[in-house]
Length: 427
Ligand code: GLY
Image (cartoon, helix red, strand yellow):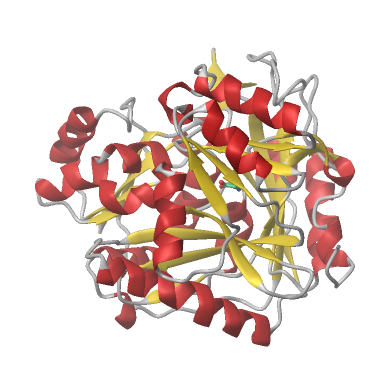
């Protein structure tokens, strides 16, 4: 089969690698891709946020399956536009994508279907915010309603801090995304990610993973898009997994069905496990996570393209599905200064050496070719992914890979997967 993959991050490079292992795939095209992806498959300079350009590309390539990686095009309705033209698409339409595109929609959906999540208020003015804060104790959680590239959440320790954050959002710090806000109860506990695939009837899980959102070791510093991930999560036992399925996964699928929201694609469950051991939803995302995907897909043992095609055709029930009982770790290398301002165009060396190591692979995110030389072009630059029979082995291999790579100002966390290493909950 011929596949068109939309997106350009580490997640899409991980998807590309998984597709390349699929026996049923003849050709893969990506748009726009990145420097690493373009070394492996033809990449097209087409913006996934431009539905007309995507359809024109699909018309030229005639893919049997289109996979939409990032949330932006999904929320824009690119999947609907492609389906209207007769293409088979992995990724929800605009209606399903509201689960990520509008946090107030997602929270109201959870409330309607009895899915456990933090209590919340929807606010459209500062007086709404004041009233919502008065009902709560610190810390306060303030969230922009719409897409904000992972930056739309503020945890405030004081009422004044919360009001300042809300004022900034109302004033347009996140554009239209911040015109409606949520004030939520703070949830303590351990966060984990469950990446799933659903065709609206059947839901299959990939191995549970954990992200590392803060830029510095020991979860210090500002939030980023994600500094690394590991999978599976050693403390997530079968009993808790069963509870997550009963209380969260199944009611979500039933909710989509009962509201007649068609859904064929990835569904990301950001979960909090409270100190009492109860699972609650922090957020839904309507695509695979980044960087979780980079750690999770190397552990998928079946034919990934076949599974995604089956999902896109509404036949997921028939697709072979098996996860390996190994471990994987992804360490993200960023440009110096990220998530603030950072330089680009810095030469990168050592990728070949890292990739020559057994069980180590390097996935590109913010890279470009300049006069034939590989240079940095974004905040998150590369992912070094390693697998192992133990978490310890995967950690050690990943960091040996990281040591091979260098570019001026490169930054990475040295404690990725340490919270899994302890073999227990952190808080
Ligand atoms: N790792 C967080 C996300 O993909 O949104």
